[in-house]
Image 1 (cartoon, rainbow, N blue to C red):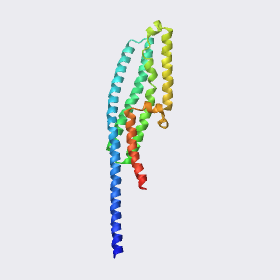
Image 2: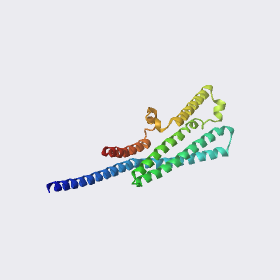
Image 3: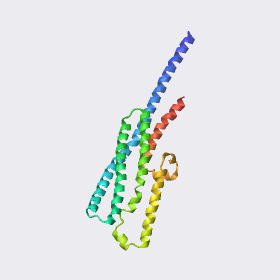
Image 4: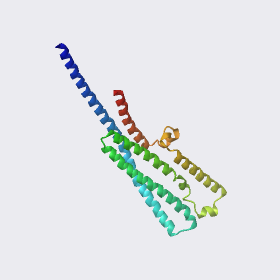
Length: 220
């Protein structure tokens, strides 16, 4: 009789322990998932501001291009070409940022950890890709101001400086476009470029979810 009672007590204890572990497991998942979502909320505001500023920048450049075309000269090709290149990359960034805002909103409303992880990976990938594209526009910020006066009165020293700066930025932008990849995330230059809240918020959110995976392994 005593053995039977003892076995029942152990069985009841095991059931309570399983329920307690299951509850702890669920609470940990909910807490870490909520932390991940909270880490992204400031990023949503940053993206919205970037979209608004980007739209204003595109409108401003479009107006300048309109006036340049209305009094077109050969020398204004430098400004128009440069401004168009900047507009194209800025519009690409606006589109990506809008998609990212929607993605962050979906993450905030998601209850599935795997879905949150998938969307975070997509957010991380799009952040890298749009950074690569934006760097390609850098050289055009060194050519939009070239005008008739520079050709008529510019010194050799001025043109050497102009060509040097444009060439260096072109080489750097192409190099960054080719090397900004996730596999280089541990490099010092990568961390320097992506040291802003835009990148660290995503990494912080992903780390919160990784703690869930670590907890699951500990329970095996």
